Length: 62
Image (spheres, one colour):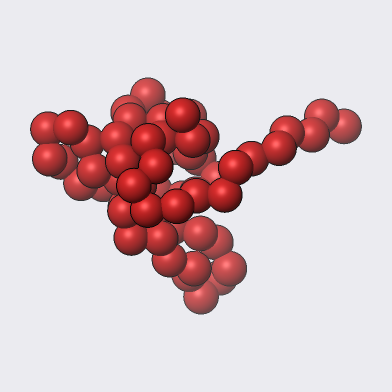
């Protein structure tokens, strides 16, 4: 079984989305939440100012 170590997400971190609908996009982490189902959700702000939400598991910190 392959294991990977992930860094904890913090507001203001640069990140790149590696999975899901927004794969390939990057930006700054904002508004980290824990959903009712137990998943981490984050808002990512791109350099152009566009916001989108994604799951924390789909993101790597750069």
